[in-house]
Structure formats: C-alpha cells, structure tokens
Length: 276
Image (cartoon, rainbow, N blue to C red):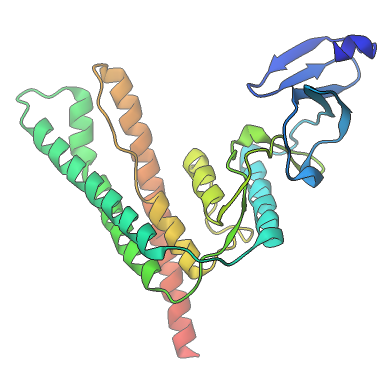
C-alpha cells in the first residue's frame, strides 16, 4: 500500500521472515513491522513510518560471509564499549551451572555409548557415533578444565548491551554495518552475543580477530560455554542421524582445535610475562 500511495512500482518482493525486501527498477527497500528499536544510530535510513510499518532504504551486503562476520564482531565490540558496566554477578552460580551441565552431558554420552555397544549388529549411524565419541569426552574434559580456570582468575566479567538477535540476516554490511532489528536488546554478560554468533558460524569464526576483545576471565568463560557440545538425540532415520552426528563432530573438532590453540597462546603469553 505504501508503494502504491507513493507511486513506486514493485518488481519483486522477497520474504526474509521478519522483514520484506522490495525491488523496483531503481531502488530497494526494506519493509518491516514497527517496533521499539533501541540502537537507532545503527539503523538503515528511514524513509517512511506509519502506525504499523516502517520503510527503510535497503543496501546489499558487499562482503563475503567471513568478512561480514568480522564486521559484525567489530560492531558488537563498539556497542559493548559504549555500554560497559560493572555489576554484581553470581560467579559461583555460573560455575556450578556449567559444571552440572558438563557432568550431565558426560554421563549422557557414557550411557549412550554403553547402550550402542550392546547392540549386536549396529547401524551405520550408531557406528559413526561410537567411533568418534571420544571427541565428546575430550572437549567436555577441556570444558571442565576451563570452567575451573576462569573461576579462579581474579578479575571481573563486564556487562553491556547485547542484541540477542544475532543472526547474520539481522545485519547488512555495506558502507557501514547496519542492524535491521534491535528491539530484543538487553543488558547481559559481554560474551552472550559472541556465544550465539559462534554457535551459528563456528566454521568461519576467527578467535584471533583483533576486534574480538575480552579480558582473560571473560575469554575463558566464553571458551567454556562454546566447548559444551549439543546433546545428540538419535532418531529412527539413519540419514537424519548421520547428518546430525557429522555436523556436531565438525563443531567439536573445530572448537577443540581453537581452544587448544588459544591455550598455547595463553601459555606463551604467561611465559613471556614471567621472563620479563
């Protein structure tokens, strides 16, 4: 209706879930329901607003997926620096919750392994999991070790504004980085958005990116969270199970390698500091 009222020809409309992209011969627009956006300076240029909808000028991404992710991380860091606060955080509760989660998952996989190994003629998906289940024990053991480590560090974990809606589709990276929807923003631990974006983009996430700035306590709490794999629930379909197992194994291998590499870097830094 807005396009008709403003004599704008519509060539194509693409539904992106929580917003629409409107194409015509000359321009592109983003149409979405009006909501309470809290980071206005990162919005796309607003063209028109009604009681129910908003129309923005739309830009295409000009970066590949990995470079776009790096730009998003830079934006998250900027938002954090602008909104950092220090408040009382129940570290013991976080530590205990993580410990319980790690122990629960370890027991789950041990029990699952026992059940699968009792099957006389196991299916391919069961064999795939049995042959690689040690990877889950390794990363859970490392998660337990890091949980102890971050908890022992004498420092503070900061809080800041967190977007929560951290899907790559919620950002456009062109001349600058734009946020499509910031209505779900809350105040939380600085690592929360990073955990979400890592889970969804672990295969291209650069833990050594200079824009990824956390203190040591925050970093190892982040590493603890991402080192807790998902619980694999087996279904009747062999194909579905194989897909789930392979995806989780890829996540575990990538994350374990990152964690071990970060450990080496941290040990080297500590050694150099000691030598000084």
